[in-house]
Image 1 (cartoon, rainbow, N blue to C red):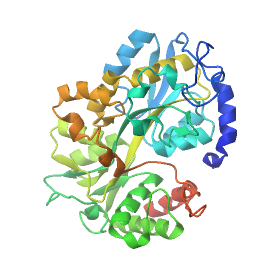
Image 2: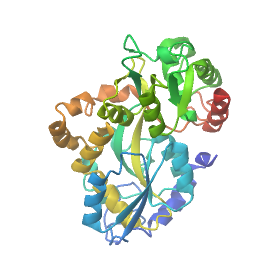
Image 3: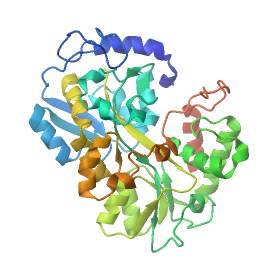
Image 4: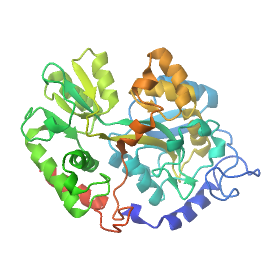
Amino acid sequence: MRFRITIGVVLTALLAVAAGCGGGSSSGSSGGGGSSSALPQSIGAGEGTLRLIAWQGYTEPNVVKPFEQQTGCKVDVKYGQTSDEMYKLMQSGQYDGVSASGDASNRLIAGGYVAPINTNLIPDFNDISPALQSPPHNTIDGVHYGVSYEWGANVLMYNTDAVKPAPDSWAPIFDGTSYKGKVDAYDGPIYIADAAVYLKATQPDLGITDPYELTQPQFDAAVNLLKTQRAQIGNYWSSFTAQIADFKQGNIVIGPTWPYQVNALKADHQPVESVLPKEGATGWADTWMMSSKAQHPNCMLKWMAYATTPIVQGKTAYTFGSAPANPKACAYLDKQQPNYCADYHVTDPNYFKNISFWKTPLTDCGDDRGNTCVPYSEWVQKFVEVKG
């Protein structure tokens, strides 16, 4: 697997690539922790085009059009449905950047597909929440490979007419019997972590400390739970539009989702609600990352600077139903919806800590257990078995 390449080797290659980006070479310190002479010190003139891979809701007209007017960079967006799809698309070298989640960002860094950036070129960088300025999913040894955008939890959505009483736990979708044929689940190997989150809370004897760092017995328990769940599953969704359609048609009445689907269904007056279950949840903290083969690097750097501004973060958060990485966006958000930032726990560190954000599973457990954890390649194989 490419993400197991030695990080040090990758960094050396990427720093060389980054030297050719941007429009200047003036003196100054590098915000990314690399050599100040290796990273661009200014952003040059835009190239007129910007090709992005993004999650639906991240590049709406109300944020893209002002950017195009300000910079002259015309934005062309390819929407990704899963992190695995985004990872594969970035390998093509046809795109300038991606809004990568944590289960793709580390693979992109280790594979040499994204370039380090100088955060001094991002005026609003220091206003980003401290926990998201240098998170492990986009910062390696002090070198930044992007800027944080939006974050949130993978919540449990349910049809209020069909699901009673209102759930406060993941239990109804993991017991193998409840709402049989009317349950859906996320169609990706990373969904194994959702089962691990539930087991961490309900079977403490397994000793799960991190749902992405699973020993073989812990991993087997999570996989077996998903095999039990298989009897309940009416559909596995990777397309947000497919999940929305399933809930509208009544084919599915309960399952994990993103806030975007909840907001879309509510806007269509569908009887749905969502809850963050008591066991906790997986989640996503997304990063705008620049391709190491970007054909329009100046437009991409301009986009990354633009994307961290409070107004853009706020507009995207309100559309998607997410928490902005830049808390200054709350001035906009709370005008749109009273107490928005309190409801989404934007500045609540305890809430943030209770979410297990997506990251790439590696053999290295990240603790004194050493190389005894199950790598992502095996997650992919076993998830195929789960789906049968």
